[in-house]
Image (cartoon, rainbow, N blue to C red):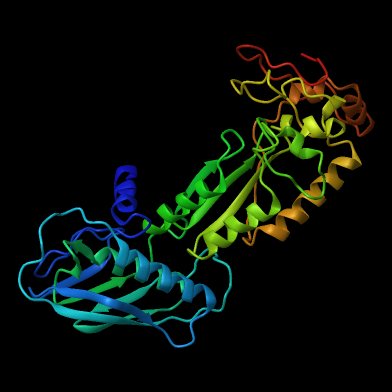
Length: 368
């Protein structure tokens, strides 16, 4: 799968696939697999000045049409031979697809119908997402042979049915390995070429806080370096770039555990006020023992401000909060926490301390 994805991007330089259509009744090279048929041995030549025609397209559909016209015209060739014989011209594709400008969402209608025929073709879709899937299918039906870009059959029909899986995602982890924005955009281009529609962006974890959050400028101290951090404009750029490709972006902020990087800038928010596993000494070989302190009102004010800023940047209905590997022994070692349990009628000896881990996992307050 990874090799196929890389081959698609290499072939077109920045976008569509280059596998040619087989002559006759079958089509090879479409990814993902769609219902498709081809007829006629005379190839269609995508003429100079080829364009997509759409009545009153939305701004992002207009950008998509321009982008795919560029993909088709500027693709590289994987074959040295020329197209044999005469060709028929392909001058434009008429695109009919509504677009209300809404951000990508779970369950978007991705169906389309594509017809490629001499002179003109047509693409009908029920939504912007469906139009993008159809544009990608068209780009994959074209190939450069010598000096010409062709569709290697006289008439081609491609039907994009509703996908089996509405969530088709890739996760990136920029908290453990910082990824510059152009790298994220390249990943999104590859996702669009493979009809993937969710970027799960693991933005913050114990290893680093690579985000200069405007609600608290001390948090970015938890980044690996000052230059390895995203500004709000960077996040908005990625979200917009993804939206132009019908890709949702779901951010992940791991809480209440895995909070060592938060504690670098805000040590007052974590249990016992310190982070034994933060900074250069923490190599990530064990679970972070630093967690947000549930007894402090400041913790909830911090989370409210965090979620408010996320809501202002990310347009998806979902956010991922991690929630894993909360180290109970750090809570058990806190006199304040045990006192709160006793005051509320809980047995302060429960839950039992976590079993020891290889290499140890010292709590922020130095407890067992």
